Every structure is written in C-alpha cells, then in structure tokens.
Length: 370
Image 1: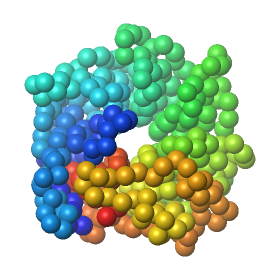
Image 2: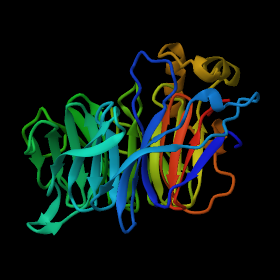
Image 3: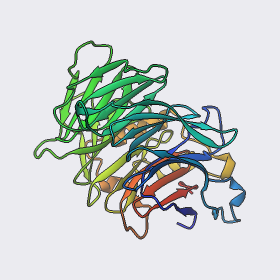
C-alpha cells in the first residue's frame, strides 16, 4: 500500500472522521478530525491531507497529514461525528456530550456547547457516553447507562430523554429514517426507536441467536434503510433486514477479535469496511460484476466518479441480502499488510480512507479503488 500516508501522533487514536464535502462538490475530501483515548490528556485534532499535487506519475501519494489545530478533550473520545462543515460532536467517557467549532479562518477549535451530565448511573456517578449520531439539527446519544438523549445545538437541555431505554450498555447508534434511530447493546440486540411516538419502548427488537454476544458497532445502508450491518465482540459481521424477521440475514466470520467499526461506503454501498482489535482493516466487495464495477469506480485524481443510485444499486442490494452472501461470493482484502495493535476507527468518503490505531498513528489512503 505505497499510496498510504502515515503520521505518528503520540496519541492513541479512538476515532477518525472526514469532514463532509458539499453534495455538489466533485473534489476529494481534504480535512478530517481525530479523537484520542487512554492518554494523560486527550484531544480533538483537525488535519489536512494536503492536495493531489503530491501524486507521483504512478498515482501514488507521498505526503503526510498535517495538523491544522487541536484542543483538549475531557475524558476519552468514545465517538465523534461532524454536525456540519464547522461543528464536531463528541461523546466522552465522562458522560458529557460536546460540540466543538472549527474556525477555518484562523485554524482553531473552541467548545461551543457542552451537556455535562448527559449520561450517568445515579446523580454524581458518571456513565460513559458511548455513541452519537447527528442529523442536523438533532443529535442523538447513547451510553453505558442505557439512556438515549436527543439534543439540538441551540438548546441547553435535552429535547427528549429515554431514561431506561435499555437495561444493558448501549454501545452504538445510527439513524434509520428521519424520525427513527437504531441502537445496539451488550447482549446482542438491535432496537429501533421511533421518536414520533411518546412512549419509552422500542418499536422493534432484533437479536442474535444463541450466546448474547455484545454488539459494538452498527451502520445503515445509505440507500436502503432496511439493510443494517453490525459488528460484534467475537469479530462477527452481521447483515440484517429490519423489514422482516428478528434475526440477521447472514453471519459472516470476520475478524479474530472485537470488531470496532463497520461502514458502508456512502456512495458505493456494495463496498463495506470493518476494523478490529486484531489490527486488521477489511474491505468487503460484494459487487456482482468486476468489469462493471471498475467502470463505475474509475478513480483519477480530481476526476473521481461515483456509482449512481440506479440499476447497479439494485444488484448491490441483492448481493447483501442474498441467501448466501458468504466470503466465497465476495472479494475481501485486508488493507493492512502488517497488523500490530488495534485499529479503532475508520471513515470512508469518495476514494479516500482514513483510520486510526492504538499504535498512536493515523493513516490516509487516497486511491482506494485504484
């Protein structure tokens, strides 16, 4: 992977996230944020990947990420999402939820909002905020305390709180539809919550069969909201169809340790990425026709094109929901040749991948489909 640029950052990296690019923009992402954990002083940092002038004649990139600014973060960064182009929302191990503003004119960060005790067991007994998902202006958070909060950036108090949403730890949350979120917990359950309803009960519950293996992460298919992927403590990747049944459509033996994050590619959802405690980062390619895929995934610097949401997307759906989406029917690539410590987080946008590790390093791969 000669086209990967690496940066040693002297911090264990818990989260990496691309800053969103405008919907109409064709240029690749250029800025990303990282959060750290298990350090004496944790930080939120904003980085520039540099431009494509660094490409050599073979299309390989030899630059390295450049720090634009950073700011101290109270507690471990458990999760992180961009609310918009300027604001970053973080979930802290202290139970707080924070909004940081990136001032692009002078490259600085400031805290613009903080909900101090968003998650707690009893008053003055903190509980980690484990997950956050943004659908501006709403911000949904989940925690070890089994609580769900809905905030908006302009209000000091929660818009809504479901105090006893779960009797076990909620590990992650994703948005399903406009008014619905989906949570995963430490006993192998998915739950759908419809915030149009006033009650405090989930509208649907799904669960892994057999042993109650904790689910650590979840992501929703970008085009087909009923398709959901989860990763578990035993390294298993599960694909679910929330329209039917209460069990996963498929269980795929993936990593040898905890699966920390799973992400569908936002514009090419036949591609999925997972990272693990075992030091690996896998690219799952479920496209059905290699030649057809390559025509859609032409990548050439600033001329990157994306898979249109047309008939090709339908073939993708059948790939993920086929009765036998086994490894034999997918092209799976480990993107890290020499795994060492845990790969804690990844994010993918366009043809660019960013990931962070316990080896105190961040990595950017710019030509993912080359």
